[in-house]
Image 1 (cartoon, chains in turn brown, orange):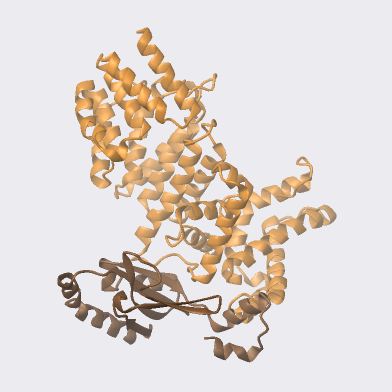
Image 2: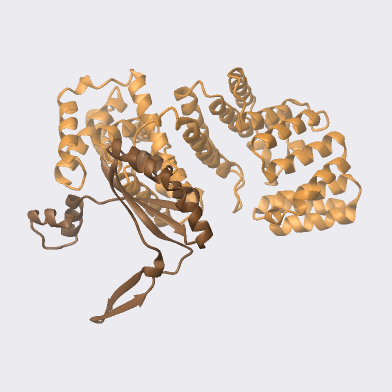
Length: 137
Length: 424
């Protein structure tokens, strides 16, 4: 089994169209219940619109704070799922069930396991003890 | 693969043959057992390198495939012991060591079914829709065909390091994203099989109609595509489109030599020397088409193969049943509407009912901005105008087609036709 993050990207639309999407919520609730019953759902969260986003960058020791998302794009990150699936086919099948896939895009990304993260970092020369694995992810 | 070895040396010949004939099977099985694409590929590569020395010392084994399988598995175990990066390393190691201990427990080469399953798994993994199309093509040729990265790079006019990176990236994605190594479930199978057939046909077409460069025929790609088509027809004998695609490729390939005349010029179907057509391939292609039709599940490859069969079976272009061909193109357009199919239908109608009827059908295509740079459209337009007796309009269309052609052989032919127009 592997963990996948499903990142839900969609356009931010006017209130009338947003209201239409809100009326799809029973579909989401149904999906989430079925994912949970199948033992696939690790987590799901919805984000507020990018109007409430703040971006932080540290450059030359200075913290820069900007109002807005990291990049101005038409489709923005609106929420995410973390699923525990047998393989990519399973994750893609579930991604296609997300109602937002009909008006937006669901990006499926494999999540790196903590032991893998530790291994990759050590291979690159990071000085980390075995027990660091529990603090990595 | 073994650089610097004299090709006539029997050991080199045996290794090269084993590489060509046994490698995909050995690799497919080892990928399943080792659970890692890259590891399995490296281990198989090691085994072939070891074969050169061992076979020269001990003689060529009676069953080279079995020898390579055992050697590759041992190399995989060695590599797994050293390489900690493979996920589920301990389980994999235990499984391989178990197989190693009871060498004969694993089905032998004569027992086709489990091995056949492995090759099918490998095809579906290489052609997985989560990989970009060029990567699917490259990975399929690399793992299931006998082509090296350098050969694939040359065939697709890409620098070798670029092609190498493309293949490495695809293998990494298979590992990181856990692209499964299995034949898709029944509900996914039809879609996924269509995707596999598309990859095979793309390989064939890339060999058959080079879109760039001077070599019109890149035979190796055609041969690989047909080998893959034959493999699929053995692995999935109940799928009509698998047979349809095989038939289509065989019927095209039968005319490969005749497509370029003795001066290196492109020869259209009606100008080809029919004595150059390969009758054995035509017979195989027609048999595959018959098999496809008997399954009673029509599809686009079968329709295209049927069209090609009608063209081949007619004694010459004049006696070809263009009305029937136009009808088959109509069926194809209903199944899978595309401007390219519409263009072919217009040409067939032009030949069946006269140029005016064909030109009427071309009108909407000529107004389609998506086709503004589509060379065959203007070549066909020129041909129909010329047949209709409008030489000046035909000349304009030929000039446009010439300007859009990326293929030197094809361009020379269009220029010849333009010249003939002025002469007449």
